[in-house]
Amino acid sequence: MASTRSEQYVEAVLALVEQVPPGRVTTYGAVADALGRDLGRGGPRQVGSVMATWGGGVPWWRVIRSDGTVPAHLGPEALQCWWSEGTPLRPSGRVDLAAAFWAPTAARGEEG
DNA sequence: AATATGACTGTCT
DNA sequence: AAGACAGCCATAT
Image (cartoon, rainbow, N blue to C red; front, side, top):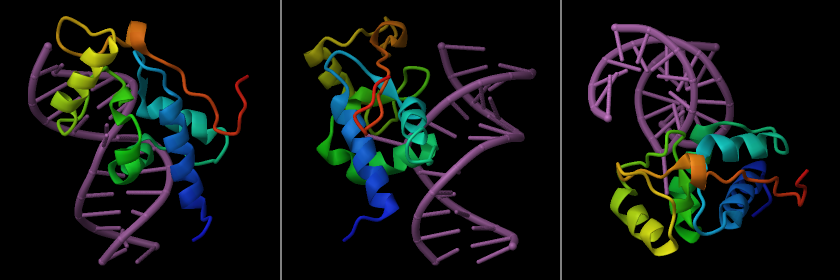
C-alpha cells in the first residue's frame, strides 16, 4: 500500500473535489493545473481517469468540462445534483461557468 | 520503444 | 451551435 505517487495524486484530486462548495463547479483542467503546481502531474485526462476510478466517493458532479458541459455518463445524474444545490445553470441546461466556476486550491493547505 | 486508450482542451469549419 | 482535427499527459499492453 502504499503511498505511491499515483495514490498521492488520487488523494489530492479527491481532496480538491471535496473542497468544491455546493452551488459551485470546477473543471478538469483547473484541478489538473492546481495539482500540477504541487505534484508535477498535470493532465486533465489524468484527473478524469482518477474520477472514473475513484470519483465514486466525491461530489464528481461539481467537476465538469471547460465549456460547462458534462460527459454523457454524468448528464442526468449531475443535473439532479445541480438542481438540488442551486448551481447556476444556463438556459441550455449547461452550467454557467461565468457564475459557478470555482478555482481549486492546492491540497497542501496553501491558498495563496 | 511503440501503439492504443481515456470523466480533456482549444481551434477551425 | 455542432462536428471534425490536433495537442497534451499518463497508463496499460
